[in-house]
Image 1 (cartoon, rainbow, N blue to C red):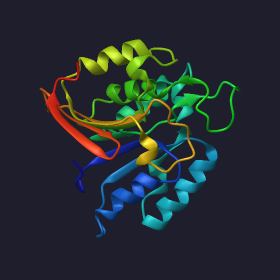
Image 2: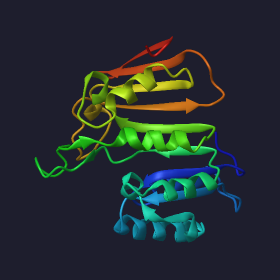
Image 3: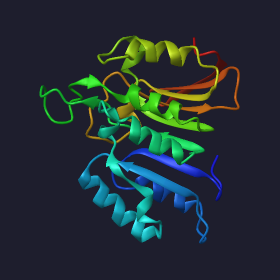
Image 4: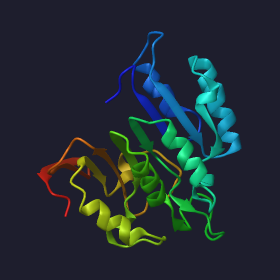
Length: 212
């Protein structure tokens, strides 16, 4: 999905990790335009250092944070993202808004990842690559999760889906992933069944089917 002419937007960078991985595919001087929104001012500084090391323009890191896209007055920031005309939007967002309960990394709080997917859809890209928690399959706590679930299940532009009910087997992280995780690709040009991969106890089940 990437070429040197692509415009790529990472909605939630922590230290420019996706920009780094994308640039590894383009070892020459010509690279795609990679814009990033940092999750905080601290992660902005970490991302800035990575951009400088890669020779990417620092101004491609937007001057607002991921969380600010959820504020009441966020439309001007979303409009700014739309003006970038991204071909690819990468959505690996914060999973929850902390509510003060539970221990650090416990996942306590209301889900917010669904809102970042909605923002990505507003930008009208060719592709949206998503990695989120999967507790919305059977409920979850967060504003708009029911609408998010229905929109996903009825969307025939989702071409590939990877489901990890027991992600601890495959992913090394300190973040609580109870309920599993999923990653999927929304492809504007795709209309039809989804290639669905489920990873259970190191066994992979594959089906091509509607999501619903």
